[in-house]
Length: 80
Picture (cartoon, rainbow, N blue to C red):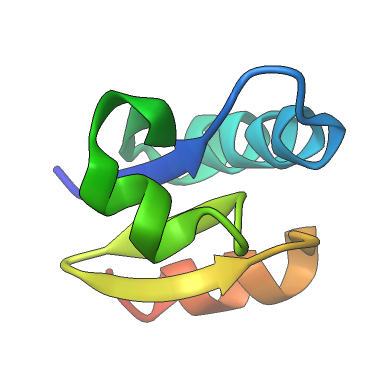
């Protein structure tokens, strides 16, 4: 099963919206979402602090910032 890493933080409206989009796509495509709060590791804050939310698969940032349902769906489909 495909695993999507979702980098986020608390009190982030963009992150909340992005998670709703990911969950909708998860129902449709059947992947696993691993939520990673950037405050858990210093390297995550350094790497993603200015980019969150970040959707990542196999170390590749698929989308970040304002997440778009249609372009994210199309990008996720390339992994199937």
